[in-house]
Length: 107
Image (cartoon, rainbow, N blue to C red):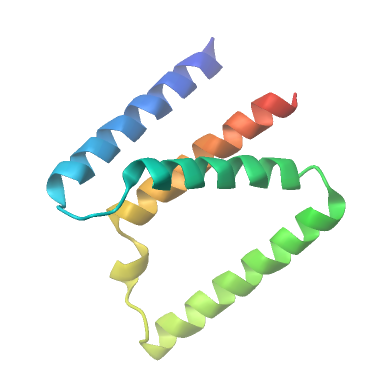
């Protein structure tokens, strides 16, 4: 029962975040395609987690990404506002939902 509430709450939060961002920004990005890609990315991460070699490569790539981001932040090439914004938050949340869907399908 607790899992159902979590899924319902996460879907409602996703919808509120999406439509609020769509009204606030007038851009030509295709939100449905972005959702589909982020969901598939999350499902792919869940599937990759079940294989040793894929999981190791994913962990190494994650560490490289974090290190490069920190170096670029220290050098001033990117700003913290480029990383922490509504779009990045929405994409991370959507990938997380895809990950949970992938985990539930694997069981």
